[in-house]
Image 1: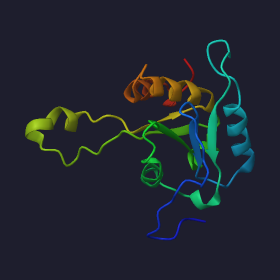
Image 2: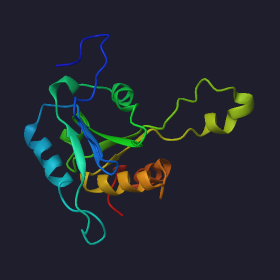
Image 3: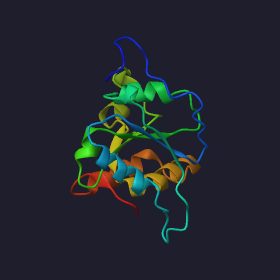
Length: 169
């Protein structure tokens, strides 16, 4: 089921996300066992020694079936403390490592910029997304929230992997 044409998708009422809670939105509903695996991996403690408890919120509503990256970004755009959102899409459900799509909420389309002034941005735009395993979600979210790293650093690391999927450092 997809949202009716022309209607905007919205986050569920009462979704109370702490600043350090990662947000994962399920957009594919074809494989419940795969989804259960994703959620199970998200629940695992994280950190170098597994010393940090997992902290995340999930949007698991059929109204989000087939949601595009642009629809998700439009829905979360009002959260000034959210710099990344993770999508469990069709690729996630088919991937042997359940690779989620990490989307930056701070990305801007630079195609309309004047090349006289912004040629460098036009030639090398900031990345908008990359793939990551569920076990890396917490580290990505926390490091972006604290400003320890920026989205491009994570995207660059993912791009160096043979399957272009980031794993925990």
